[in-house]
Amino acid sequence: MYICVDFDGTVVDHNYPSIGEPAPNAIKWLRRLQIYGARIILFTMRCDSETKGALLQEAVDYLQSNGVHLYGINRNPDQDDWTSSPKAYGHVYVDDAAIGCPLIHPKGFQRPCVDWKKVGPMLEKMLLGKS
Image (cartoon, rainbow, N blue to C red; front, top):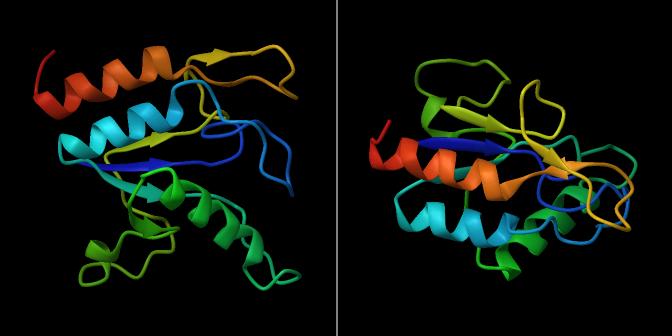
């Protein structure tokens, strides 16, 4: 399963261009989902011409240093042979801006972030084929 994951507000608090505090349970769940075979694709807007990709690289480094191995960065490498679309193909997109995505607002956070206590188990059930 390909899981496209936003960064700011999903993995960390909104503190762009800096990296905010970790969203509760995000890293724990991303590492766990990988154990079940999930292919994590970072799908973020942290790429701009001013910094020549430095802000995107900071997000990539953050995830990798926390044990999240990315299958793709703003793209799914497996789609190259069947489409030239710039949209990363995924089975699921986890984003704090997505309608219906469960959110929490931890004390001290700039804005609400993804509630991984709800999202993680939902993704785990999908990976394990349970309804």
